[in-house]
Amino acid sequence: METLSASAMPVAETLPAKHFLNSDHGIKSWLLTLDHKRIAILYLWSTFFFFLVGGTMAALIRLELLTPNGDLLAADTYNKVFSAHGIIMVFFFLVPVAPAVLGNFLIPLMIGARDVAFPKINLFSWYLFVTGGCIELTMMVFGGVDTGWTFTTPLSTHYLNTNVVAAAMGIFVAGFSSILTGLNFIVTIHRMRAPGMTWFRLPLFIWSYYATAFIFVLATPVIAISLVLVVLERLTGIGVFDPTKGGDPLLFQHLFWFYSHPAVYVMILPGMGVISEVVACFSRKRVFGYTAVAFSSVAIGVFSFFVWAHHMFIMGISNYSALVFSFMTMLVAVPSAIKIFNWSATMYKGSISFDTPMLYTLGFIGLFTIGGLTGVFLASLGMDIHLTETYFVVAHFHYVMVGGMVSAFMAGLHFWWPKITGRMYPESMGRIAAVILFTGFNLTFFPQFILGYLGMPRRYWAYPPEFQVLNVMSSAGASVLAIGYLMPILYLLWSLKYGKIAGPNPWRAAGLEWTVQSPPLTENFDSPPIVDHEAYDYERINRGFEVAA
Image (cartoon, rainbow, N blue to C red; front, side):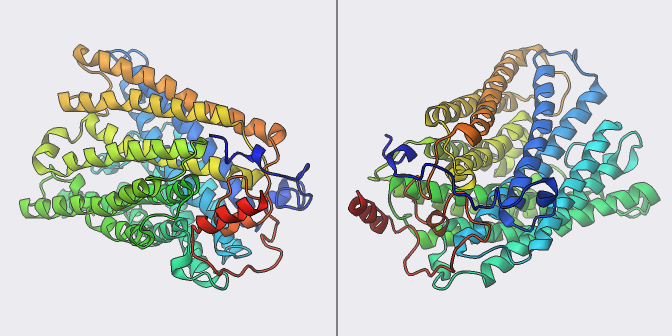
């Protein structure tokens, strides 16, 4: 169906002359900008660069695993490659990309504000992020780190042939970027909403980012402290994690996972906010159970702090503790299931249009559901003993984080691309790319569930020959997946010059961001908006377009 395409809408012949992209010129104007929209674009290019770096590491991993014997990379090099892949992808792409790009660009527009609460801190956050990334890249060039992205002790504290200090400091610096971004979002949402924009008129996108911001502020200091302690023990031998000096290596596990499991929801909650917007728009309906979906975002944020020890079932914690954390892990699935149910109910009997953002959204729902269901196996004590430290965990993690979060980010990027740039992309190419990404992802990671069930351990450089067929399937799928990532890069860049003019609201969507020109004015709104209706009032919007037609 093409009923919602830009070509069906009356638009101006040329882009508006006054907007945030061309308000002034030169690199200096960008590097010193305080405009939240420009800072979002800076984050987009930065995270895209780190995605390419992490993706290159992933390609080397899959090429190595084509054959059972380690014949492409040396064993030590392989350890450093998968460590670099995890560190870059988690801390410099998955955690920041949706909050820093979509959140920075859209939160002020969605709530009717001129900018975020602290524009200078917003720019400073980007500089901290880039500084941390540069430290990490320098570490990789000068020898790398071989601890994995989890910096597990005593490996990270007692072995000297690796750059743990530099790697930890890069993440430490980038962590302050996350904390300041979260603080900025919380204050902006609390203090800068337009008149009439009550809490229950907020888009569900804002609810998701609000919960994410609190996780940023509360959880990130814990990983910062943990890595500082690792550095201090490595440099001074203070013995916080060394049992020979009265320390406890399991203490690091508790500290690290206390941050890292909430960080999972830092990666996925923003994507859930995107999905709510896209499902409502392309179903032409209000979101079913708005209040339940809103509070489920808060519930996910709260529960995420009580499940960290499910990463530690085989590490010697008490059976009672393991039982409690197993129960809590299954409980956190409830608010996620509420969202899946309510999105499905929203689509039920809706006037669904299968445009590119909706196809990525459907991909997200499928991949995230598989990731969530397989998480139940890992939350079950008996199954976890067999499956932990195998490729089953790798597949589960990627279904949730990469299949889910990246699909949601792609849905959001395509949905708001006309608003960001004022241009439409080629719709047919977008649909093809969405299908290729979904297909390539399943070809890549579904065989890894089987590999893990059969007992292939993760992070191994070589493996028994009976696992080769499934590894070849996974590596072949990664090639298809790479095409699914490359296509949007090419046609979105093409659209910047050759795409059709989008107009202010090419999707006939609800929300304040669709009431302003595309790209938006530097100050966002000509005059402060006043909100007098509920979110997702598509009945009113549909009537308005019918009258205009």
